Length: 164
Image (cartoon, rainbow, N blue to C red):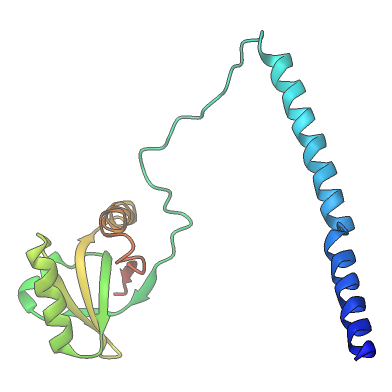
């Protein structure tokens, strides 16, 4: 009985000691925080009487297309009537192995006001294309517009470059 009381007392003592000790990491963090806070306050008070000029470079109206990756495929429209609408750069919103699923997705996007093209690649994948352009910049702009409008639903929307 005395042994169990002694053990409980020792465990409680260790617990209290361990809980009251601050780690060296916490102390170092607090010291760095206080130093940064002091530095921030002193630099703010120094600049209060000065005019600050900030240069903001002009925003580009065209999306940067150099770093936008495209996937190149040889595709053909499912409906020959869409052949003239299928340009070099296409915005792909869905891909399916099954034509029925691709057709259902096409109908869904038509209801949202898009002129959708169904195309098939050499691996029998159906691509649901919501826009097609001769230039990459227009395709990227459309992709970004759709991403913003339907976020996060179409985060995986991509640009297909038609292989001739």
